Each structure stands twice: as structure tokens, then as C-alpha cells.
Image 1 (spheres, rainbow, N blue to C red):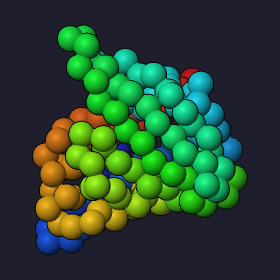
Image 2: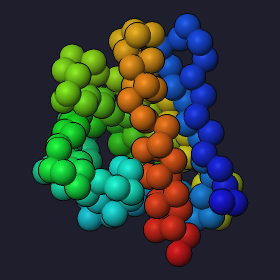
Image 3: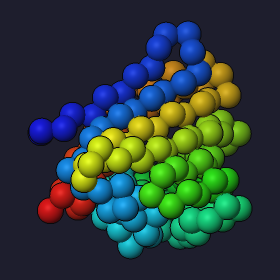
Length: 156
């Protein structure tokens, strides 16, 4: 893997920061992150299937998707888009329906590196405990798989 994904969670803080560089323009990475037909191709661990129920990327728009494993277990997620600045930034909420009320606020920034993109996400959780629960859930595996699939999609 030429561009590793970095996940940082400083002890005692309610934040998770993720960073990855892609060999694609901000417009390409942004489109892959906001076009529902493309999102379905890369978001989530490899072993799960994804169905997008709703993905309305605009200020005030909402999203909802379902991941399913081979045994038919479902993992549902939802949120609301607050800020959408084309090719630059998206601010949204994120909630795993299996942990209702534990809503995080996520900012994704697309930095132009001259034909390449540095994607940075900053997630703010309601508590350190909620952040730690997210880390313990297998999030790192899902993020790494997702970003590897995203790289193949935008770089290929």
C-alpha cells in the first residue's frame, strides 16, 4: 500500500483523526465520497454488503445506509449533512443505530496536493467513552478497508 491510512486517537480526548493521501484530484475523491452509487462501492469493510437507503448530500440533507454480513446481521448508520463545500469540505453527523444517541460530528477536508489529495477527517464524540467504544467496535478495520477500496476506485 503506497499511501497508508493514519488513525489518531489521543488518550483522554473525544476525538478521532484520520488522514490518507490519494493519487487523485480533490474533485475525484469528493465525487466518490458524495455520489451514492460510488459510496456504495467503497464504504465499509470488505466482508460486508452495503445498501444505501438515502444519500442526499446537501446542507440539511440526510443519509442512511445498511451493512450486512454473510449471516444476514444488519448494521445501520445515519446522519445529516450540515456543510457541503464542493471538492473542499463536508461536515456531517454520524450515528450507528445500534448505539442510539451517540452522535459524532465529522469534518472531512479535501486538500489539493497538485493532482493528489490529502483527505482528513476529524470526528468529535459526545464523550471519551463514546469515542473509545467506537475504537473498540472494529472501526480501524472498517476505515482501512474502506480507504483501500476508495483508493482503488479513484486511482484506478
